[in-house]
Amino acid sequence: DGGITQSPKYLFRKEGQNVTLSCEQNLNHDAMYWYRQDPGQGLRLIYYSQIVNDFQKGDIAEGYSVSREKKESFPLTVTSAQKNPTAFYLCASSHGNQDRVQETQYFGPGTRLLVL
Amino acid sequence: GEDVEQSLFLSVREGDSSVINCTYTDSSSTYLYWYKQEPGAGLQLLTYIFSNMDMKQDQRLTVLLNKKDKHLSLRIADTQTGDSAIYFCAESHNYGGSQGNLIFGKGTKLSVKP
Image 1 (tube, rainbow over the protein chains, first blue to last red):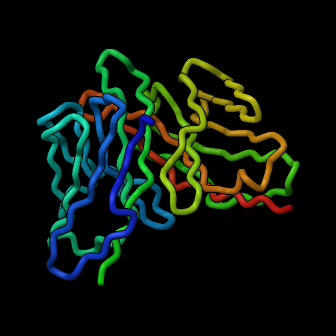
Image 2: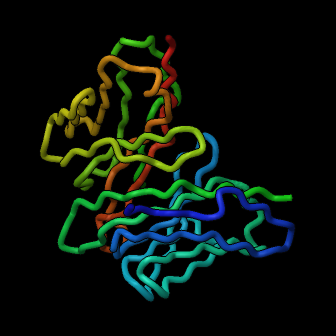
Image 3: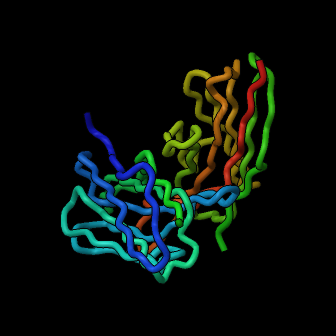
């Protein structure tokens, strides 16, 4: 089965702790994205990566970090600098072909992060 | 700046049609999308429309686009209880040279009453 997986489904963070959310895709997509979803706020872009070993900040990158060492993996670290991390985190991927304008994003099932 | 607006709630009776509306501001958006999110789950792509089209139909779903008014709508015919979910409108956005990035509305929560 092709798709995007995120783990864990629920994650608890203690104050001052860094935590890492996993995102893996076997769709052979070049581009990957991380969004944060808060109730009534829609989705906001944290980071995106159009190709391996390259990534760009989105609208709300402060307090987060990412890496893209492999095409299929785009982990997100929520650092202690993120003061309000409680949210639902969604990972997505798309083909990322720069010649193709239509770029449907496919989403993972999400990780809910809670602060203890 | 770019913004996508949707009403937050819609309630319909089973068997009726649902119409979810969306307005956007970026006239350079090439594609507009509708996604569905069920409770505690990720987003599922329902359909998308190219900006030079007025209408797209896919089984029970009809998308209407008024580019002049920057208005997009999603009509669900014969709405079922399984259609209860949050529906997001999104526009493609040229971010860092790529049209792959999307700007999302806040979502419309559709409640279907039996």
